[in-house]
Length: 304
Image (cartoon, rainbow, N blue to C red; front, side, top):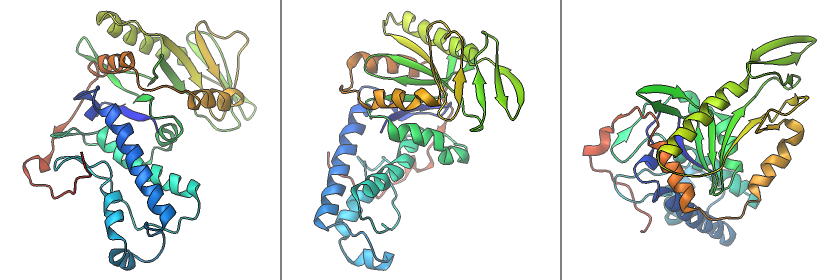
């Protein structure tokens, strides 16, 4: 599961320490998945019954799972509903990832002492959830970050930081029968239901985001490959000549593109974290003090 290090202009836990949280996320996720999986295999995890029955049996393991990723009294925990019958490993994995998603949103919208007021639609953002759940956790995702350049906020495209490169992604999600027609630097077209609509070229925002990232890395004297991609999961993208230094991934190429990312075998890299830290420090963060900061929090910690 990819790590959501920046979401719009919300404050992020990764801003505090980019060299701590990515590794901690991977380790804690693995530990808690292993515990959940082993409990499921041995029958120690109750997978059926009512909430009242659950409170009477096998509570220790459920509470351990409920407090997923808890590290201290001021940290967050993952709230899980009553567990429904789970008969396959695939169902168990989906259950685990689905309830890990809200936890990721907590880390991407709060620090220990600050929190952002998030739009409720973020919690129902299936596109965000889709990419997080299908990419390995060595990928660091910046989901439409807002950069602070010369005291001016500038919206960015999706930024995916792997151990070997930064990929800037313009995601095109249109009706399934729509065909995207590549155009010039300023205007593209969409063919749909025997009509053609003109749209602003995605190359404009890609070029703007790339320019920002290059400037930030250059200012920090960081050298790291940058790639630009236009991606559509549902639509065919037709082009006569592929734009210079831009990858075009339509629905026919999408599965292969995604699988190539899922097949990557590499740990987190120091250079990768240095790049992510440099970029996130130039992002806008809007937040308020967490009301519970001065209150005692009775959360059960899961080991150190």
